[in-house]
Length: 66
Image (cartoon, rainbow, N blue to C red; front, top):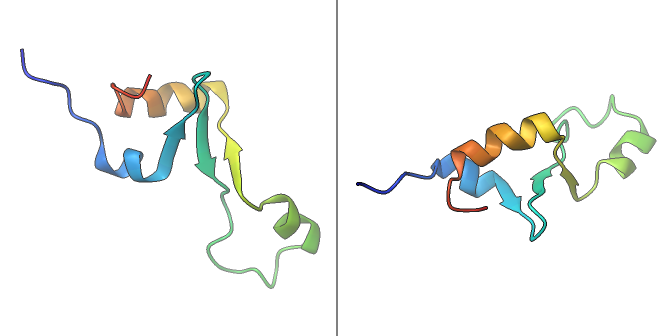
């Protein structure tokens, strides 16, 4: 049986924690920072944990990161 393949785009963008949660970069910070509020820019620093339905989709892309 051949090995399952990991999506290259997913392994570059997501990381799975030891407890199985999926970490991703914050959305909405690529461009257009002038129109964003200061509070939004502050709150969107670093990374965030994906919601359960989104995490389920991402885990399907990375079969060996569980």
